[in-house]
Image (tube, rainbow, N blue to C red):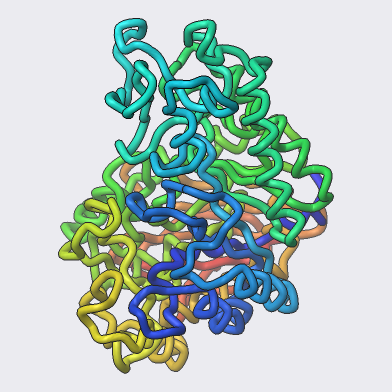
Amino acid sequence: MKNDTWYLNAVFYQIYPQTFCDSDGDGIGDLKGIESKLDYLKDLGVDAIWINPIFESPMLDAGYDVTDYRKIHPRYGSMADFKRLLRESHKRGIRVLLDLALNHTSIFHPWFQESRKFKKNKYSNWYVWNENEWFPKLPGKWLTNHHGRHESAFSTFHQEQVDLNFGLAALADDCGNTPKDPGVKALWEEMRNVVRFWLDLGVDGFRCDVPDAVGVKAFANEPELSGAFWSYIRKAVDQYGDRMMVAEHWDDDSHAINDLNFHLQFTKNFCLLSTHKDTLFSENRQYIRAGRALDPTGFDEHINLQVSNVRKKNAAIAMQTSNHDLPRPSTGSEGDDDLTILALAINLTHNTVPFIYYGDELGMIVNPNAPSVEGAAFKAQYRTPMQWASGKNAGFSGAPEKKLYLPLSKDWKSRNVEKQLKDPGSVLNETKRLIALRKSHPAFAISAEKITVLAETGNPVYIYKRKAKNQAVLVAVNASASKRTVELDVGEAGLLLARHGTQPTWADGQLILPPRSFAIFEVR
């Protein structure tokens, strides 16, 4: 693995554009708003940003229902605004990733409007059309009565979205059941050209939405189709040298990297402290408060499995703090920053590529009362406006409060960038210190070894070592509400970083960790 591959050693930051920063006072975030916060991101230590979909769309699924892959939705600004954002990001050494949803389009996409016509045309086989009774039960729905052709169109997700057909063998012969079908082949070429369009503009890569859905999610017997398609896209990306693709994919077998040919794949265990399954702390947040113990064993085993399953060079597993679809690290202990800071410490010191969801660097909480907007349903609570300041609308927008895309979370006056920058022990400043440490020590490189030292059922202390050729560091996390002592003798040790205000000690083979703390040592 090459240590100089940029995306392997980058810190990524996810931006939900609707709620990041509003520059024109309409209550919705935009590209100029993102541009205005680039210096903040640079100061934080961010190397790349991933922006959720900004393409033209009827916004029935918050932009994942695309009507034109080559146009910017007017509410975010113009193509000139986007080009300027790219330039200003690159001036600061920040790369830009776009979010691509290639499995489906909006039902209002011109392609679908042509495809549903009774008379055969170029687009007839671009979508999954067939008679319902020809198929077994599928994890989706058939949309009928399209005012034209007799068949029904298949939808895996929202009914306003229809699945594109990349050559499903299960279809009837005249419906495009092979990538060699002229219509299907034209679709593959069009998708490759979409990717090239943005790469030509200077985009540094893509987060790809549900890549396994291409030929797999609905028709589980055709995984080879998704592999062929994404390898086809990867070849186009590789022609641009240092661009990359990260897969929204959660399989334990690193399938998106090994078989679909992605550079990065998100781990299923990204949401460290909030969700109630597949996570490190999970419901143990309540257990800790009740004096019961943390169990990091499952988390550690899962990460080790994911990382060890990566068979390709210059590829890696990525870990998120959370994202636009899932709870924040603060969920379950709102207002208590201790465990959120531990989540960030693990994310930024593990042998995975770190992604930070906007606001997690503040310990932002969710707003369970946020109404569903643009198909968000319960996910709206995870997408509330970024909290920049203690003034009007948390500094997110100058619009009247009732015009905001989503209402603010209740903690915005006490938890915002302006306030946390002044507090040495804030989540924001802890995050900045952790990012700086990660970048300044080779033992935190993605190629450095990770060795589990302590991960036991019933023990709230989680310890692991990161080891490079000329350096070794030890990371110790105590999620307990009480002091913990660990018998541990690894030779000489020098403290590199600890939770602000805590004083870990290590002498005579005993490591003493203060409550809810982390400590990072260089060991010899």
